[in-house]
Every structure is written in C-alpha cells, then in structure tokens.
Image 1 (cartoon, rainbow, N blue to C red):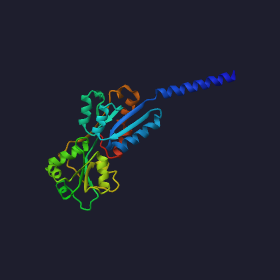
Image 2: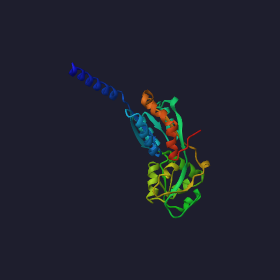
Image 3: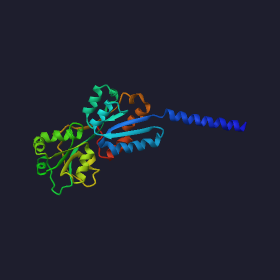
Image 4: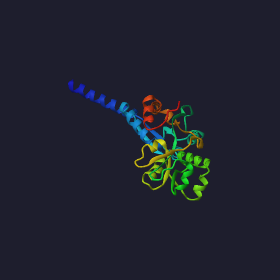
Length: 252
C-alpha cells in the first residue's frame, strides 16, 4: 500500500512537470540594436518572477529585423527605432495594430576620440572619416542623413567620400571607440556606453525627426499570453526605470 502511494505520487509529480513544460511558451523579441543592454536587463528581471517563460531577444537594425519578420523569422514582439519599419510590417499585416504604442524616445549625438573638439555640424567638414549607420536599413542612419541634409552637408561629405557606413548604431560606436573614424553619429544612449569616445555635441533637434521607438505584438505574438504579459511589463514602472537608467526618455 505504501509503495503504491509513493508510486502514485511520483507519477503525479512527473505529470505536473510535463504539463508545466508543455505549457511554457517561447517568446521571441526583435528589438533595435540600441536597446540591447536595457532589454537584456529587463529579460533577466522578468525571468526572476516568470522562470517558466523563455524569452529570446534578437538585436539588429530595425530594418534588418523587419525584413527578417517579413521573411518568416519567429517574432512575437517587435521594437523599432523609428515608425517607418513598424508601418512597413503593419502594411504587410504582420503587426497587431491595437498593441502598437511608443515605448521610449532617444536623441542623436556626435561622438569622437579625436583631440580636436568641435561643437557644430558645420565643423564636421574638418574631419576625414565620419561614421553613420546605413540610412537604408538603420533609423539612426536616416536621422543622421536628415540632419546633415538640413545642414547642407550630406551631399558634400558623400562626394568627398568622408562618410563611413556602419550596419547599425553599435558598429558606428565601435568605429569611434577604436579611433577608426574621426567622429560618429549615434544615439545618446549608445554614447553613454562608450569605452573611449566622448560626446562632442547633441545634434539640433530641428534638423531631424524625433527619435521614437514604437513597440507592438506581432500577429503571432498576440496569440500568446506570455508574449502579451511581457509586452505589458515593458510599459510598467519597473521597466521604465530601467529604460531611464540607460538614458532613454519615457514619452508622456
């Protein structure tokens, strides 16, 4: 009788473990590269209270992520560094429109390890190598292109072969940190993580569109309760405190 009871308890325990394992969901998060440290910390914090949920972040330029999602890559949550790529996925009917909301904001700065300090866009002509992200795939590159165009410098720097294209904002920052370029356009949040490069000046806001990070559940993500739970967590007070720590601005 005692052995039978122990056997039944073991079977029950195995059944419970298998049930929990089967019900656990994998949540795929596609986030702009500039969010890497903040999202990684949020994933760790969330996992402390929800150890049964497996969160799988994927970081790259917003355009690269959008193209991956369009091609069928698994993604339950998408966070872009500008509205363009979010709109693109909405047009492809891959985004849950009702979940679409601005998560955080950022700003553009110019960084350098060069000993020649400058404080304006016009003075960039003194440099020979200036890193910007590729405007075709990275929002940071598009913002830099907008700012340089507004200052009347983009065509000139391009013609003089002074612009060095990076695949995303982290690569642009790395170029500056290593001293491989004279200056680089990056987000303020990335500049705060630099090992060597320092902020030379903030790019005047009137020269480029406001840097906003829209977030949304994908159509597949909207079907997952765990994905929805983490998505709501991103907009909560504890998550917002983490974003602020890394220099992001919470929209009113």
